[in-house]
Length: 446
Image 1 (cartoon, helix red, strand yellow):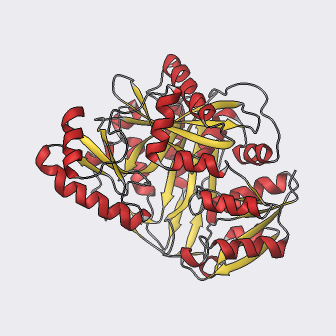
Image 2: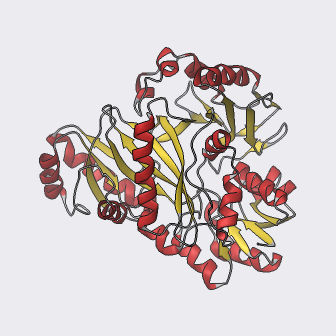
């Protein structure tokens, strides 16, 4: 087992990893930018190293500085969290060259799943259903039109190196294709330094359902059930839950087996997520694989009573997975609390928190790195907390979440708490009648 782990990340996920390290008797090292000097992950780590100014490029994405922090603290492993360098194969390769264990998959596995075209080809070979679309990258607009006419409108253009909705455009008819083609390529180039685009059939009113998987270094892969992530705004998840209200035991078995097949196809090592689109007839299609821990991992932890960060660390140290797949024994919902104004286009709201009271009580969990007096910097993701509720049934869980949201008080900045309060009262949400476009028609007037 590792003696000291450096966490190459910030905020609530860094603090989350530090807590598990403490419970496992492993020393932790926090790295931080000057903007994060007062963050709780810096305060609670055994050691902390400043790695640069606020800009991510000069701090959390600066591999030489992170490796220098590893050297001066004598850490023997790196946990990348999510975001930043978590799915950077080159970084994982540097770790291997220096004899530092990267807590996650191998560089080869990251590359195979990081490129959407390669991932799709791998899934086809493994027998995992995929959305009909182009055979590889699209060379020009003429080929794009040909493919779109073959598979039928609507279609969606996606950046091969994409994520978070960048380089993504839905096209409903032929005359819209050329201008959207140019926009998608420019956005992909600006976001990922790669303007490669491919086309898929656009699944109308789909569910976004993902399966948590874990694989050890000897080829054993299991799944830990699903999460429904369909409540999204501009492809960014806002609410996640397990089990999905759309799921049936039969569909869970088939989708779970497909997720395991996906992991086995690349001999996956570590904890990861296989993401699917599911149409209204419960046909499902592979979308992508995230080769890291997810923001929403607490939802799974709450319904199977299992520490996924501990599982990551144990797998990275060479321990084998024992037992089979996990299935939910309760219901859990996570609301992402962002420093954003939901009544003003979810505009970011950085600033100093004047007062902060997080919810408590049976079945209520809050993962956060903020406190009264903390200044939310404008340089990073706006998420300041995750509010997770667990109960025996979905109905009880929603009621508990309503109570917890009423108790969640943040003064000094705008937050998404009012949005979540309104969502929990929405009749269609309560009935489980929603899809990824649900918020397009959601009333967000004050």
